[in-house]
Image (cartoon, rainbow, N blue to C red):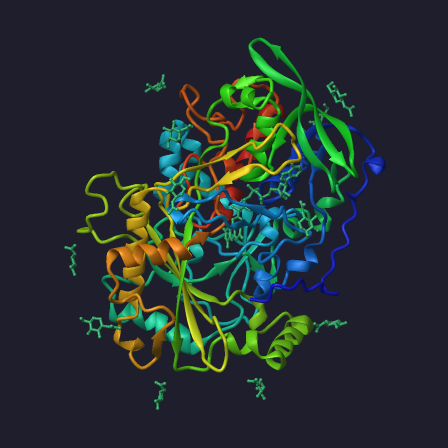
Length: 585
Ligand SMILES: Cc1cc2nc3c(=O)[nH]c(=O)nc-3n(C[C@H](O)[C@H](O)[C@H](O)COP(=O)(O)OP(=O)(O)OC[C@H]3O[C@@H](n4cnc5c(N)ncnc54)[C@H](O)[C@@H]3O)c2cc1C
Ligand SMILES: *[C@@H]1O[C@H](CO)[C@@H](O)[C@H](O)[C@H]1NC(C)=O
Ligand SMILES: *[C@@H]1O[C@H](CO)[C@@H](O)[C@H](O)[C@H]1NC(C)=O
Ligand SMILES: *[C@@H]1O[C@H](CO)[C@@H](O)[C@H](O)[C@H]1NC(C)=O
Ligand SMILES: *[C@@H]1O[C@H](CO)[C@@H](O)[C@H](O)[C@H]1NC(C)=O
Ligand SMILES: *[C@@H]1O[C@H](CO)[C@@H](O)[C@H](O)[C@H]1NC(C)=O
Ligand SMILES: *[C@@H]1O[C@H](CO)[C@@H](O)[C@H](O)[C@H]1NC(C)=O
Ligand SMILES: *[C@@H]1O[C@H](CO)[C@@H](O)[C@H](O)[C@H]1NC(C)=O
Ligand SMILES: *[C@@H]1O[C@H](CO)[C@@H](O)[C@H](O)[C@H]1NC(C)=O
Ligand SMILES: *[C@@H]1O[C@H](CO)[C@@H](O)[C@H](O)[C@H]1NC(C)=O
Ligand SMILES: *[C@@H]1O[C@H](CO)[C@@H](O)[C@H](O)[C@H]1NC(C)=O
Ligand SMILES: *[C@@H]1O[C@H](CO)[C@@H](O)[C@H](O)[C@H]1NC(C)=O
């Protein structure tokens, strides 16, 4: 992937009501303050301002430069190295990964991680959400009751090349009336696609075809769906803050505004509330107040960080840093969960791979020019063609001594996404990405100091548990069995790293030295039942023990879904906005 920043002169969005300077803001008092303009924050801002009686201010630490990331093929551009649209985080040493620390991308830009993520659109299993409902005691979080919210978010659109999509998705599980575009791929790699689809015919028992993995029953292999419309990335900023919405007089967005904490705590009828939200802009601190509710949507890293700096967290840990405890909620920052990812590749006897485009400047420029002039061609999507969701074999010994972490028998443990490319030319390559989508490992977000502008300590806990290491071995074995289908015989030349005859210890060494994060951290301000002895928010997303303070973002997921996390985050935000409206209308 190219890691240089490509500043495009195309597709630039000229938003009206985006304020860069606090001095230009018409007011420092709103009905609702939304902290963070990411996946969830922009949904909530849009939905609340449907009511002209509600005034809303979004405070976003980053800037608005959506045009820098709208070319789907260049998805990696903002991820490789520190850049001005990033928080530039690193993890703590990962015990499950030989104590490696690694960079931990989080976007600092309007749109949040939907402005730089991989755009894969996967919801997870119905069982994932039914488990949320069981944990929280609120049937509103079940699959059947959340499906209308997935539909409010999703705007299914034709792929950029208008190819015949029959048999590639099931329209019954999609909505054409939502706000955020979702589509099948806008360009094809017929040779590789045939390899993958043919495998589902040659090994149908282990790798069945699934027409639509977003039906609630994801097991099997299906065609990639992405948050892309018209060949362009559909981020929450480009969709939920599109000109028709941002022009609402009751919706204001302040950029370059990093929230430090909630200030001015008081207790009334046993509930804590805060007078104001403090933020920094241009080196100075400001306060802004909410008449009705402060909604934290700063994401699974930002939200628990703000809570702890506000005195909401584990009393012992806060006092060790000299922070006065306002609300003793030990679960803040705990139970952080992410998906580990492993990459494996093979050289192949086919020139139809993206190596050509990535490595050959002439072809790269041609493809770029095509996208630039008509939003067609290979730049309209990421190089992935299909996604497989699968379980470890029923006779596997992995769960001999531990409970199966998946939400149920129709929920995957392993995802494999299929892609061409890896370079360098003149060879050609294919690449599989393996994700552990039902992990048992847990990590944490904690504070390094009492300074709200210090980065927090980020421990995604990748492969920290031995079960997850065993699951990673199973994932590799699955991938190797996939390419045992006859169709691969004359296509694969050689693996980049030969794993076929490795001992368990050798496989573990490979896993621990190469695994990374999928960027799917969640659950750091988790929802639990109203009477639970743990958890951070109640099923209505209000912070336990507080009034006028809620969390609406990926932090609240009770358990990670067996899928990439943006679709689940969007559904939470759509329902969360309804819950807020229900409280105040
Ligand atoms: C590299 C990467 C790739 C990914 N790929 C995919 C994918 O292909 N498919 C998928 O479904 N999911 C993917 N995800 C995950 C998905 O993007 C996230 O789960 C989702 O964006 C989380 O939404 P959120 O609203 O909780 O947080 P975010 O989208 O991260 O938004 C949080 C916002 O809050 C702002 N903020 C934070 N702190 C403060 C503060 N103190 N003051 C003011 N503003 C603040 C941030 O700048 C940001 O804009 C990926 C994530 C990453 C990192
Ligand atoms: C806005 O407020 C007015 C007066 O309080 C009320 O009559 C009206 O119904 C409200 N509008 C909405 C959309 O709630
Ligand atoms: C991240 O690094 C880039 C490049 O060094 C810098 O411009 C940017 O300000 C940094 N981001 C933060 C939040 O410090
Ligand atoms: C990782 O660090 C921990 C704690 O410092 C230590 O106990 C462990 O031996 C280290 N593991 C490796 C593989 O170095
Ligand atoms: C913000 O409010 C707090 C609590 O009332 C106060 O202590 C602080 O001085 C205020 N900060 C600014 C910049 O006004
Ligand atoms: C973590 O989540 C589990 C449920 O999945 C819960 O039992 C436990 O109490 C949580 N731990 C904390 C510290 O919140
Ligand atoms: C590639 O395939 C062609 C025929 O399809 C064959 O002649 C050639 O030997 C193969 N090359 C490799 C490296 O396997
Ligand atoms: C790049 O592609 C062009 C156009 O197909 C071709 O002429 C050229 O030889 C290729 N260059 C390399 C280095 O492969
Ligand atoms: C994209 O098109 C614009 C004109 O519409 C042109 O100025 C720009 O150079 C083009 N960029 C690329 C990378 O082709
Ligand atoms: C599990 O069953 C499969 C066939 O279904 C077999 O190939 C494999 O060896 C078995 N594994 C174990 C651990 O028994
Ligand atoms: C792996 O082992 C099998 C069976 O022992 C053998 O046929 C094969 O050649 C070995 N492969 C490699 C790459 O060593
Ligand atoms: C919470 O309420 C549920 C349902 O009434 C009950 O089954 C459970 O035992 C209660 N839990 C606690 C910790 O009180």
